[in-house]
Structures are given as structure tokens and as C-alpha cells.
Amino acid sequence: MMGILFWYIVRHYLKILVLCLTGLTTIYLVVDFFEKLRKFLRHDAELSSVFMYFFFKTPEVIYTVAPLAVLIASLLAIGLLNKHHEITAMRSCGASILHVTMPLLAVGSLVTVILLEFAAVVVPLANARAEYIRTVEIRHNPQSLSFRTDNLWLRFQTDSIMHVQHVDPEGDTLHQVTLYRMDDHFRLHEFTSSASASFAAGQWVLQQVTQRAIGPRGRIRMTQHPTLPLNLSLTPNDIKTWISLKPEQMTLAQLGTHIEHVRHEGHKTARLLTDYWGRMAYACAAVIMSVLGMSIGLLDIDTHTPGLARNIGKALGIGFVFWAVHFLSIGLGRSGALLPVVAAWITCVMFLIVSLNLFLKVRY
Image (cartoon, rainbow, N blue to C red; front, top):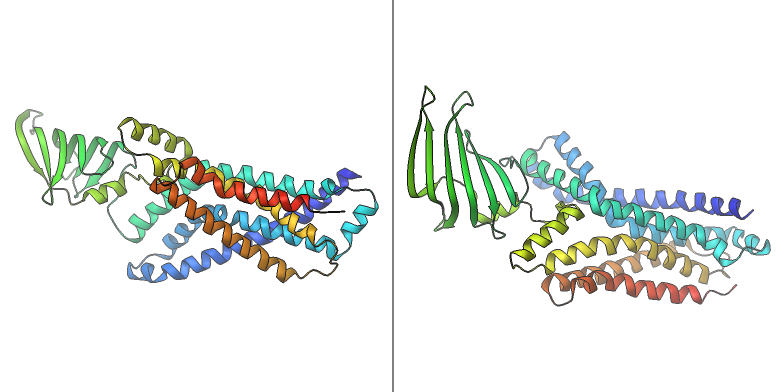
């Protein structure tokens, strides 16, 4: 009997959760669309590119609103069961509080596992693709051939490809630069190697340059220069954008590797570590919200006609407080005011303590 009860509550909860998640995601995307509509029109963006941009932004939206959706669904699920006297029937049949709440907790845990996968792989890859569509297809900026601090490939002008072995985090120094210039038939006719390139006085300058020009019969003519100007229109800020140092466009594995690389070079890692732990902490918020939602719902167990609108209002208020506190602590962690692990998890720990405290107050 308890197995039947478990799956009955799971189905009941999942229907409400899918409805809440779909509604919140749709509202978020519609608001974001109208906010960006003017920019799309300014760049004469094609409808297909706009559609694909929001398609690849959807995983991030789902990841963002999922904890709130779980909270609202938990409140509504308990409220509806209470409204139809089903909890009273369960209690009269000997079901304990664990039998009623375990299905909600199981679904919340499953959502957390899915969100962890989203945070680790799905959202970063989708964000990178959405950024490509926004930059290249909508804004018509030149295309970067890779998005890494090591082994960066970049196409510039109409006949040149540049390879950079490594880029400094500030984007103002390029190490081991090689330029490949093509003719009209896309055949290599010149390649230039340089120890480094630095940005000074608004211009890129190559150091320790060796040029090799390929003649019509395959003969190579080599010249060397101590310095040589590089006709590259990108600024260091553009380079930082190309190499995609934004943590939200890296998988957790890539971000971890990047943190070790930055630490090895002696740079600060507080911002990156905060984002690394923050992803996992935010995913775990789903199971915490399920505990909080069902605890608040069970505290109203004696109210047989609970106001569903009131419960939704409670959930929105709690969700706003969670987001405000979480992103405030993340900001403090990025600035170095808090330890990254503390900044990432402190909000979840606080809400977990509140949730468990409310759950222990449930009496029946």
C-alpha cells in the first residue's frame, strides 16, 4: 500500500512541478525577449537566429528558476492534498509524516541531480553556443575559431589565420604567435612566427619575428625582424572575450583546470572558485526548497481551505529572499571578502537550517 501511496504523491507532485517550471521558464524567456528586442532590431537579426539564441538560453533559464519552481510546487502539492482531505485520509490509514513527505523529497533530490548535470555540462555548452549566435550571427562580429586561453585560433581580415600558444589573463600579451596568410585560392603564401605580441599605444607589436614567404615554385625566402607591427583590430578586452574566460561558458571540468592554471601562474582565483562552488550550491537549493515548501505547507495542515494564491505569494517572497542573499554572498566571495566555499554555500546552509527547524515543528 505504501508503494502505491508513494507513486500517487510523486505523480501528483510532478504534474504541478512541470506546470510551475514551464510557466516560470516561459515568463522569464518572454521578459528577456522583449528586453533584447530593440537590440535584435538594431542589428537586423534573422528570426531563425533569434529563435536559436533563446533555444540555447533555455537550459540556463531552467537552471535558474528550478529551485523556485520546486518551492512553489511543494507548497501547492501539500495545499491541494490538504484541500481535498487526502492527507487526513492518509493519516487515518496509518501513514506517517515520512510517508507523505518522502515522495516530495525524492523528486527534489532528483531535480538536484539533474541541475548538477546542467551546471556541470549542459548550461556552459549551451551558453557558449548562445554567445556565438549573439556575437557572430546577430551582431555580425568576426568569428573566433576557438575559445581557450591555450592554443587560440583566430581568423582576422579576409586572408589570415592566427595561432596563439597562450594568452595572458588580461589579454594584452600573446605568446608564441604564428600568422598564416593565404592567397585568393586559399593557398598558404606566407607565414610569420613571433615569440610574443604586446599591446601598447593602441597597437599590437610582434617581438622576435621571423617571416617566411613562399614563392611560386615553392622556394622560401626568410627574413627576421626585432619588432614588427601587427595589424589586428581587436583590443585586449576583445581578446579576453574571445578566449572566453567567463566561467559560465566553461564546464565544471574545464573551470577546475582553468583555476589550477591561473593559480599556477600566481593570479587570484577567488572569483573563479566562487563560481565553481556556487554552481553546485545553487543546484542543491532544489532539494532544500522542497523541504522548505512541504514544511510550510504541513504547518497549515489544520486549514482545510488554504489559499493557493497565498502559498504562491509565500513562495515568491521566499524565492526573492533566497536569490538576494545568494547573489549577495556570491558577490562578496568574488571580491575576496568571503572565502569562496563559504560564499557559495552559506545561503543554502541558512535555508536548510530554517527548513529543518520548520519541519520539526510539524505536529500530527
